[in-house]
Image (cartoon, rainbow, N blue to C red; front, top):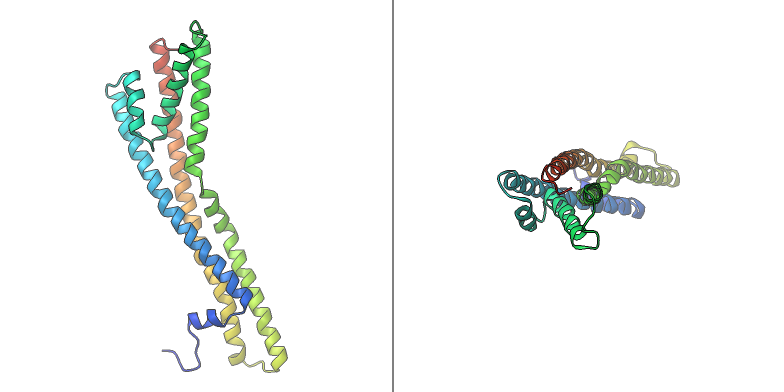
Length: 226
């Protein structure tokens, strides 16, 4: 139970200096942005995996290359489907251009380059915004520490000006300052955990994409397309 002279958290925040309040506001906004990224990115990765599985089920379940190319548009969030479509699109362009007599080696090189380019684009899309989580996780504690140091400096300046060094006069100012560190940790800890978890899912997607690309190249070679 609080006494009449005790200070609640919101009272301490409102009583903090402008710089400390600015630090707290910045950390709070960073935390809100992190949670938005976490929720949106998690949903994207879940949908990407779901559509990958659906496309692969159809691809290995009986679709031929032409049908798979047509069906790929039904899976706009699947990195596998988009990578496959990009490779087949380039292969068809090669056949329709002025190099109809292109060797299998040339066609193979075109497919490999197309897959590599598509893979890089898809992985970059999955990794987009994860850097914000990493930055928040590493920087937020130090930003909060800056607010704490600044608040403690103001407290000691107040003590020097008043000449009163009692615990009752020092404690509120130090408490205000320490809240900045607490908010920094509140922003950093979820960001660090989410970054590692989401990055692991992206790596899993990348491995699955590489595996499919190898299987696709083998399939195209067996069918004489490259």
